[in-house]
Image 1 (tube, helix red, strand yellow):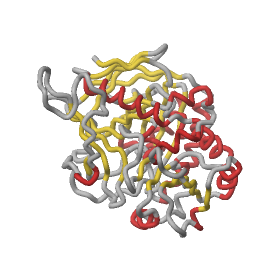
Image 2 (cartoon, one colour; image 1 turned 45 degrees about the horizontal axis):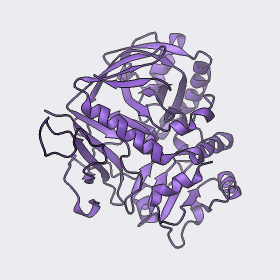
Image 3 (cartoon, rainbow over the protein chains, first blue to last red; image 1 turned 90 degrees about the vertical axis):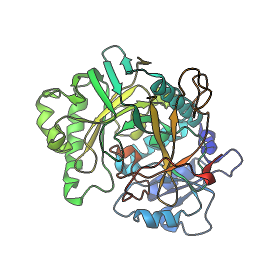
Length: 309
Length: 82
């Protein structure tokens, strides 16, 4: 276990963070690891300097403004299990990987990827056994990731920002700032959704579990990507369901391109789990769906070499 | 034009994004926010970044953004300068 690594997120001289969750079983599990843990419902006393916040259910979570008030003055590291599989065994699998993660190494890896993005004249290439992807980049590239290990005072950040360099859309124009072509050998797949997903779409989340279980039996699976779209037929007879659950309006358009940097957990990754940690283990991952108007599916190729071109 | 990375790292308790903008100076230039021989840790100037929408990736979900901000800006935030 590498629980000391997480402490550096809150500054070297700070007290250990408090783990706050909305799930009794997880709270007990954390306490059994001799960590300072408390239920979110009872989090109303003196505020600690740092909190690792682990929500497992979106429905009972206060709205953003109320959350900011609840954590006022506190550094908060988010572990949003509610977006993926938050059932007890899956949640404990994720927390075990959290404690095994090396945050310092991941942030150093983030910086290496960013320097490659800056140094690239045209874009990047990613190659492994069955994956050959080329990316072209716009002059302005929008990224979600950490370049700093320690949180600023009262800053909130997600483990997703620590463990991957995610290329997203231009925040203003809502246009992608990367373009992808090639083929990718998918080794693992995940499904997730935002807390802001409308309740009437929640049925898609349950159906995504079934699709994911079927898809896993077919992995590894090689898909072709042209002009940042997964070509029709890539998932065989699962194509139509994938299209429906993600939102047909995207028509196969990738909604994410990211590079995982949490390499310290690699020997412990279990692909049968729908855990956010799996996508951060290394390599490249792409996604379909936005998690709001439909399910967000991540497809992971965990090994390979990223080269600027 | 040199490439720029608009990096969002987290969210301030105001609900605004916190990030930085990284770029490399032209070859031979002594100015810029980074340098070709330096790591991305150079020029640790933090910015408050306003974004119009939440990420398409739910791995960043839950962060208490104010999602109704109309524009993105890279203006440096002196309070966050380290």
